[in-house]
Length: 114
Image: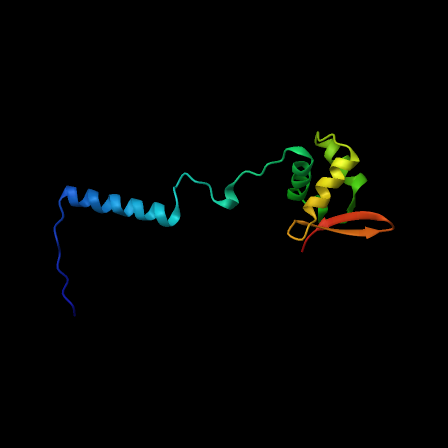
């Protein structure tokens, strides 16, 4: 059995150790007040923001056409033309986006990426 030596620390030494520990934790884990990426508030402004709102509500679990998306956005107060909604949807359906686009009968449909 190894014997450990107990060292008595005074208040000054304890403060120094705690100060160093705080700095190390901030360097490794960041400030406690900082938000983690999963805790950041999503921006739901503009036509793309409205589409992100619909995504968060599970609207795209089934295939949706632009007309469906435009109607759903209008019910939430997003009043944009078909061209603006189409542009937002195209950007959200890029390779790294949350949606997938496919053509059916000459019209694009959008659904969640799996």
